[in-house]
Image 1 (cartoon, rainbow, N blue to C red):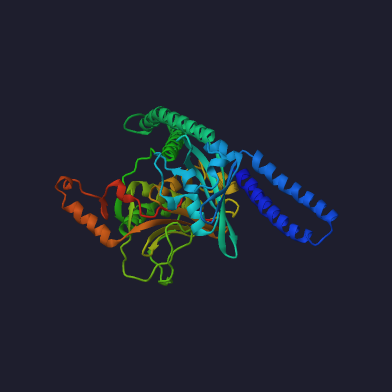
Image 2: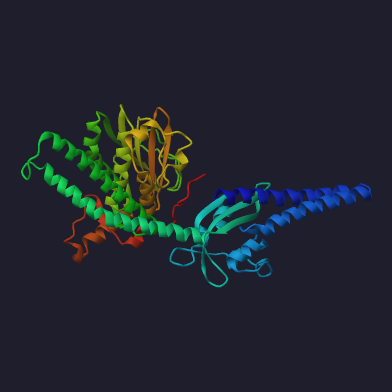
Length: 469
């Protein structure tokens, strides 16, 4: 995947530099003798020819769009992928040629397309999950990168570089399907083995000597670990293909986190670690406002017991917080683990902080990738599958949220989760509707929660799933 951006960066530089040299050299050539002008023109012609060779031979599609949104360049690679010829595409608005689709095959909102986002934010936008509609109405899985061309702080155009990843996407789906099927089938015999081992260890059911019991206990622990591995594999496969069970509700996060902290306290006490829970932070000023896509720690205004509502599945979010908390306890030998809740008008922020080993800077960008594990003595001793944080990211993204980590080696780590905040007035409205619906009266929600339709879970402005540069 990196090759796309390396080629794209070099290609863009070659085009711009070549064009600039061409214009400057022609002006200078007018003031020199004809012999030198001929040699210079030949040299510049060769430079342009090299740029044309690159554009015409690479398999990646390249589109140049001017500030008005009109396509000025459409290379053969783009023709192969989209089915549009350069003659037909050049001169048209990019929206007519590059129609971006969601996973259901419906056109997405224009503001969420890579071109619109790059133009709005004045920075490169990468979308590895983009789907575009070809001229023949086929859905093409692509990896897209759009870079703005800025001159005197003004965007003069956009360069889009993309490639067809249909085969790679299909291979990934096949791998995920295999993992899902294998995990599901293997869980059954593993569960049976675990059950029989439990019976063997039960003094009321069977009698074994102390030495045999020790072996059985070790086998029971190993079997439980194997069952957890299969469960993680199954969950990760479901998270990738959208089959993860999800029941969003409006949750008052203060009460939710307080109860969760109480449930997790025993795990910290087993390792003689202190555990605390904090709401808000006295250091915040009202000017510290960001959105849920930001990767910046929030600090909240000093208020009395604020009500932070968010739309989540309580059980799924419990998985996330518990995973982060367990990791914090595993990698912290002494000190404490802190759970926190803060926010502003638009964001609810949760965090889990520890005083453990810390994470090397080179590992942080890869930490939420599937099967990635930090390779050091601590992780090799503790073990793990490398799936926990990947599953956490997928669950948080279900609620249009953002998860990231900040860490210093030797001092500890803090994992942050930003979720779109639901206004108290809207939350109370949902609570009132729940209370006034007769056919739901028998269903009592958990403390601080109320069930809402899945369609209400999406905020008006979804949070990008790609990391903020």
